[in-house]
Image: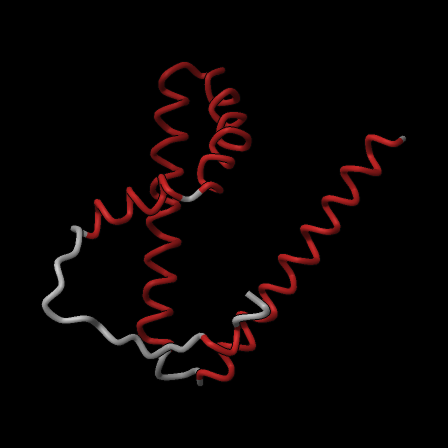
Length: 122
């Protein structure tokens, strides 16, 4: 992200006349092909499901519904920011945000990796 931040732009050029998947199917395939989605569900998601199992299927249903609704609200918010944000933010400011987010991801990755290794040493 840091290395390619200068290449990103808020201008999206659509391709006309090309066949594409329905947005719902595209979202499902995008999620399933994302390795982090699997990792999240195998770790954090599974622990939440285990916790909600204390309340039976009602607890699992509430967890799942709440999780899906939270995703829907969050991604609707992000979608609106992207759609309307093009009017208020320049490409240079957007590139800076992407570079800072990438640097923070790198920092946290190194920090958590170091903390994990250090935890097992003690």
